[in-house]
Image (tube, rainbow, N blue to C red; front, top):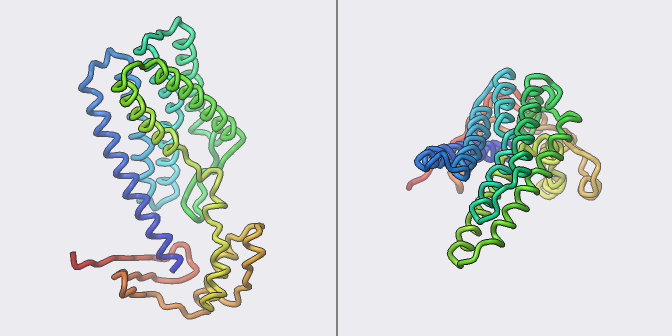
Length: 289
């Protein structure tokens, strides 16, 4: 059951990543139809380009199989992430200028300095200074964090906060109801790339792989294999202490079948072996519609 749920989430993640990449690429092409001499159009195109890079790399890493492929696509993803903060700052500055508050030179200087900082981080990307080696453990392959990862995270949050301060200033300078409504749509839409592009798995891989509720399920349904799975990833927490259930046997010892047909949901799964991260797994869903 756990394996089916986990694989279903991975498949859904790949589909969503591909959909976001296609949408961002379409918006990127659409932005080219505007006058690229306009700063708002240029900065918007740069944001869309960063999002395309992030989610194309995310999609490709989802179908990669070799460690070298994982490493290439996950590091390519960081190219888009690195330039999102200066792109947002550039966009907010251009937007503020359209409301009658042009830069006196300081904001443009800050934008150029931020692009140089992101370029410096980019030069460190091929090394293991910004992000470390590939980790292939559950819940998904990801790069290890380093002390410079924390530095970049601080840089990312601070620059995004400054960009949003400019967004708020631009919103307050709008006068008509139509302008405020359009600015509201823009601010809400701008949240998605800023929040959805960052690789949170760098900091929360242990949390994502930690399912203390499996202890409770093992006791409730008399399935020691559930507790066995959680024991592989358990971390000290109140829920682990509250629901702890010793696992006597794993999936192999419990003689769990290698294939299963879930009649109510019309899902079938097959695997070559239990307790082997390299085992083959196939799942499918049928429907009369």
